[in-house]
Length: 140
Image 1 (cartoon, rainbow, N blue to C red):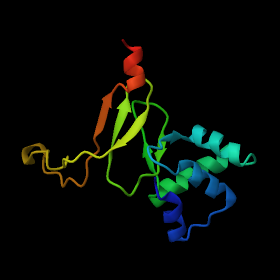
Image 2 (cartoon, one colour):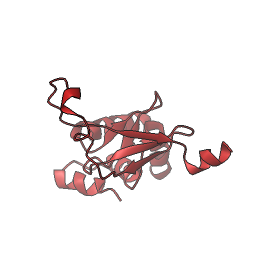
Image 3 (tube, rainbow, N blue to C red):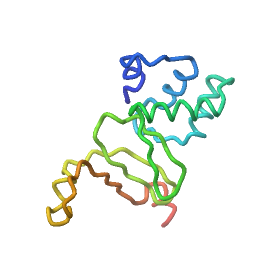
Image 4 (cartoon, rainbow, N blue to C red):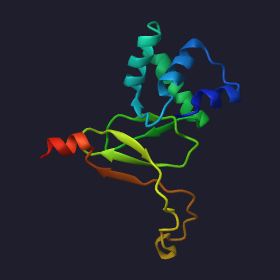
């Protein structure tokens, strides 16, 4: 379970009813919703919430570093509340499902010095791709 709401409270971020419902929708494991999905789920809880409020809130959360924007293969941006726990992503090339994964290796250590071309490498993003069980079953 993500700790998004607790982190926002700890920062003293003003939790209006609209902001709270967006944070509640994003809270959880393996949450990678599009802005439209966040809006639909937020509107189910708070019908008067506008699409603009959802987009603005998501933008603020990204700027604060409390939510990560995830883009895969030109699909709609998704929002990941797991911003404070090191992880990579596993993406289904069929349906686009995204799961957080925690490999044990260090991707920075796997990049040989001669392949760094003088860069002071500060981070690495690894995306694993394949078919989820549902899509793999449909392909048979």
